[in-house]
Image 1 (cartoon, rainbow, N blue to C red):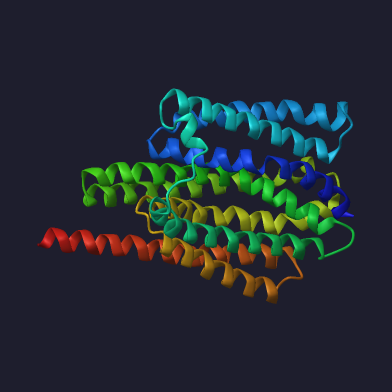
Image 2: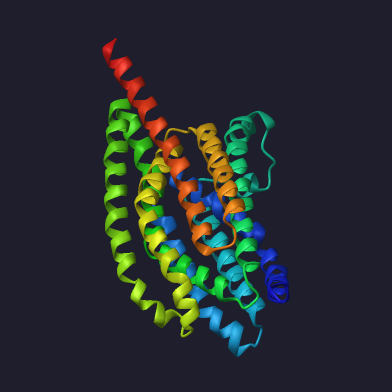
Length: 316
């Protein structure tokens, strides 16, 4: 049943893969120039376009889920065009350079860093697809899937904010490292403190939203199935705050290999728990906790390594 909806969506959505890839690279280029305001404005504008087009294409044009895919594709095409126009205007790229293949020598650093990033992305996708498959197969009534979807939505209330802290860390820490390694370490400490503090606050706010489950679903069985997972997700925000900022710091230090190994080990632990307790949503969300806890250990390892290096250099 799910495939009947997924197939037309992916068929239309697949047409925007190139604009999405170009937009992602352009976003990184602006971030590399320490310009975070421009990508924010473009994202806000294109998301607004997506929001407006969704109901028009889905309901007015009667395209259904394919309309949702088309709306996203149009928004990403608009984002790509805006990015390219700004990059040409600011002379970050040239019209001829866009279509000129780069020399292999210039690609080597990108391939080294990119391989770790791609490995990380691959294992994360494998893990999350496995979770979706597990939840879909949990029962044929759709109760577990609906409860899981609601829990994810509640988690995103705080998760998106905390993820933003991680993105900020990947920008602010390189800027601090320009001054000195000590400045970079102090910035890491400051952002991690902000991360766990915001995790506590936002996790508490998320707990307060649990009574709103009745608003998100009229079905009592769905509400009951979502309660404990939503509580677990709320508590997990403290871990998320530290992990997201810590991984942002690792990006700032260009610790790509450590980041990839962290994700692989985290997903491995997650899959083991998921395999053992795949019969319930509590097991699924407990596997997420294991995933974040293992990543937390790697974040702490990275921070302690940087601290050790700074102290050694200052002692000399």
